Length: 233
DNA sequence: AGCACA
Image (tube, rainbow, N blue to C red; front, side, top):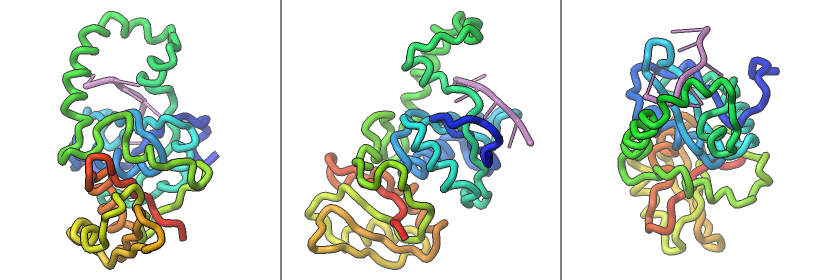
């Protein structure tokens, strides 16, 4: 298997990340970049000697993780190709949610109250992306991957972005103002007969991805976090 | 290269 013989898991392990990127920014960018593949429950990144340059992205569905592993494999992210595998073990937030009792987790039990408090405190800061972007583990932008493409068919990186969940009043000028601040912007295309969606073209995949990360979940109105994915070729 | 949940 291309993923190093690790069985599919809803958590992906990403390595070869640029170690100069600050932890919070890294988590935020990973969240935005990967949320096109499905709902993300958590992003874990530590900058300790042993764990820097790596991260875990926890999806709510294994299929989302599988698409992410395949399609973002080797994708240039902060100038380094991402190396993606399935995580070796299940994430705590999953085992907790499923009520699975791992005997090996017992030693952790003691620290739990302490850790819990710490975690809560941190989460309230960490997982909150800067500009009022989608911080919630629930209701992120990809709630809008409404059974559209059959759950398996997520598009690989593309210089053209597909935007969904726009308010019907959105104009291409409004989108241009938003997207043109990112390098490589070319144009916005909207289809009169299809309100709520748009295509935004950049010069290449890397530039479109930067804009996607920056604007994923951006709310034109409080009810309309935009869902940004790569357009299908 | 490196698989955690400060």
